[in-house]
Amino acid sequence: MVVRPSPVATTVIPKSKSTKTKLDNAAATRPSKRVRLQTPEPQIADAGTGRSGETKAVNTEPLAIDLLDRPAEPHTTNAPLITPRGSRLLTYNKAAVGASPSKTGVPRPTTSTSHILEDACAHLIHREPRLKPLIEKHYCRVFCPEGLAEECDPFKSLCSGIMGQQVSGAAASSIKRKFVGLFHDPPLEGQMGDDRAFPTPARVAQCTVPFLRQAGLSERKAEYIKGLGEKFANGELSAAMLINASDEEVLEKLTAVRGLGRWSVEMFACFGLKRMDVFSTGDLGVQGMAAFMGKDVSKLKAKGGGKWKYMSEQGV
Image (cartoon, rainbow, N blue to C red):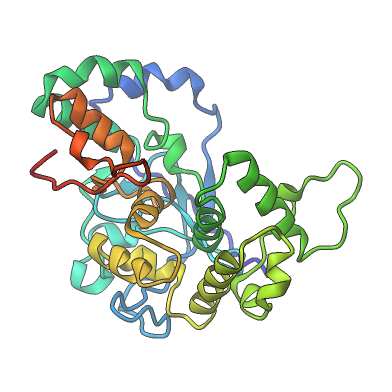
């Protein structure tokens, strides 16, 4: 059941006057209508335990949020997260902006979703001017205001990551479509598998491994996804925990799950949660940038192919 807070007056966070940046050039591509959601403040779970019953003293009154221009912080989750019941969780609302971190459980925001990308690009160019033409040529749509407004269902995103391990993109899409279809009646004519709701963690946790394997999953992957569903269903993992946890706690909690390695968690933290302080030195793209900067990465490739090894941050 979707949680629908009662309507309240819209609160819009004012923009800074200094907006003559790369985002101005992208203004023509933005929606002309602001995205506004009546978003309840999440229960702040204890970051160490993930138990949603243990809350901190925060203002839980529903506030209307402008998703394209709201408080943001590189070390927190900047994406709106979706819970299994359909409610949306945000790290900050108006009440949380000026509150003490000891009360909210998260650091005070240092920027906004309309400026966080330009701040990051300015920092990178300041540290390494050679990156300027690359940054100007390849606009980052992941962390632009529209990208940061995209909702993320953590369970769905992590399941999709497991399904996509060591298979092609086409195979992963086929497996995901069949997986969702296991929990629905045959679709209507013209309806695609992606149009149907992804199963909740509780439903997946109740399934047997042979049942899940009907989607084309290997036995190991079916076990991983069932185990992930169990952790979300029993509260060990939750959207609230991922809102409140530090970068280190996200990595620690999720790598403890079978089937989720460090690289998978780092990609989820970056592209799913929209956390910015993610430096995956085991990622081929990062190592490619290291080579661009003149670093020797030839020793990182295992003999005979296979996975690339992690390199130290000092090496990068």
